[in-house]
Image (cartoon, rainbow, N blue to C red):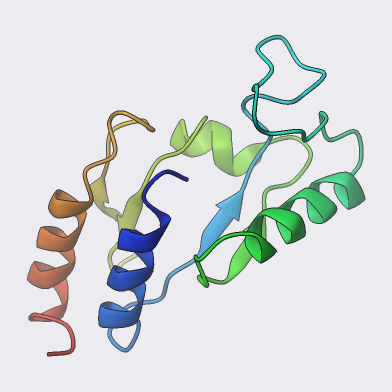
Length: 126
C-alpha cells in the first residue's frame, strides 16, 4: 500500500469514532501469477493458511497497524466490493456503503476518505 503512513494517521485520528479493518484479499501481483510484481515476492494463495501467512508478513513489514481480516478463498469480499487490487470503503452504522473510493492504487484519494470520515464522525479526535 503506497500511502500506508497517511492511512495510519487517519486510523490514529479516527479509530475512537470508527472501526477500521484491512481485509487482505488475493495477491494482485503474485510472484507466480499472470502479472507478477518485480518487488513483491508473494506466490498465489493456494490455501487459507497461505493467505494468512502472506497477510501476517505484509502487516509485520508495514507501518500500518490497522487490524487485518482475511478474505475467504472464494474471494467473496473482493468480488462483492470490486476491491482488487485495493479499494477503500466506509460503511455507515446502518451497514450501507457511506463512501466508496475508486480502485487503487491510482484511484485512492485519502483526502476524500478523510472528508467523509469527518462528516460521519463530527470531526474525529482533535
